[in-house]
Image (cartoon, rainbow, N blue to C red; front, side):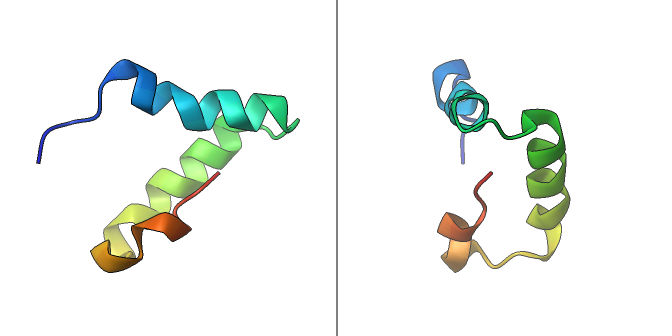
Length: 47
């Protein structure tokens, strides 16, 4: 699996900013949940 490109990675951060969500806290939370998350349920890993 190749790593996402910069525009793909930027999208969740920009979405969080538009929704007045603390994007750093949201991204930290999302990244912290990845190791225990099932790959088949990847859509649930959203900011």
